[in-house]
Image 1 (tube, one colour):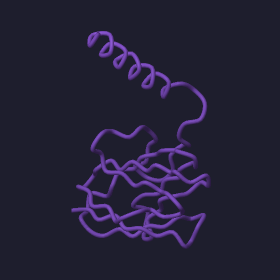
Image 2 (image 1 turned 60 degrees about the horizontal axis):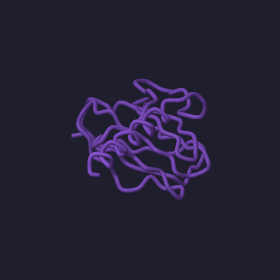
Image 3 (image 1 turned 180 degrees about the vertical axis):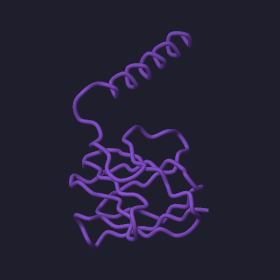
Image 4 (image 1 turned 30 degrees about the vertical axis):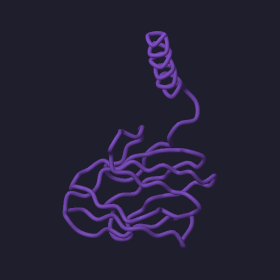
Length: 125
């Protein structure tokens, strides 16, 4: 009986992984330097947007890939306040995108270009 449950769990995980790779929906095209779209890797640095907030400040290693997930129905951006360190557009309703954190250590405040009341901070060290 345990073997059947284990096999069913493996098949369910495979179906979920394959289902997530289908066409339609998905992440928008990336924007800005060093940005890409993709899926969340386990343990990867992440920003989760919910209720028009970015959540707690995030600290990452230089050059880390940061995943952004947007749980709101509205689209948002994660745009560095100064320069062009990062700028990514993330669709709503579970959309994801990634960007590469700057390689220079420091504090990088960011905002949403669509919603000026949204602010966050990325710390690189």
